[in-house]
Length: 114
Image 1 (tube, one colour):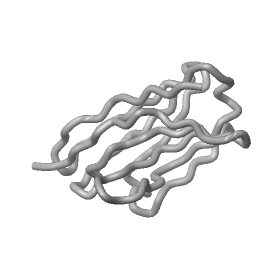
Image 2: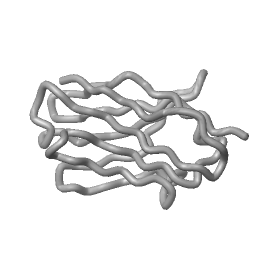
Image 3: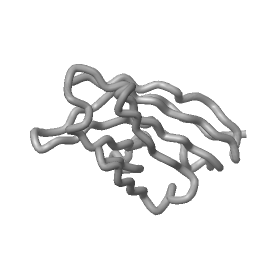
């Protein structure tokens, strides 16, 4: 399984970005897909997850601002990020979780500043 994340960039506070993560090399529907983020010197923080159901969960810090979706036909998971704040600045990672373990994609950097 491989994950390819994209969509990061610079945005002003209050702006929006959409991250994408393309899944390949496995059966997408078997995996719960998650987004994490990490800033230098800190541990990786869980942001949101979506099962194949799809059942969605969000960290309190992004609830109401971020939306995670998955397209099982395109084997892609998205993270729509609205009302971005400087505190959302981080490298964002997608993750594919199954009973057999975790797969990580490369990070995509999101910078929120004026």
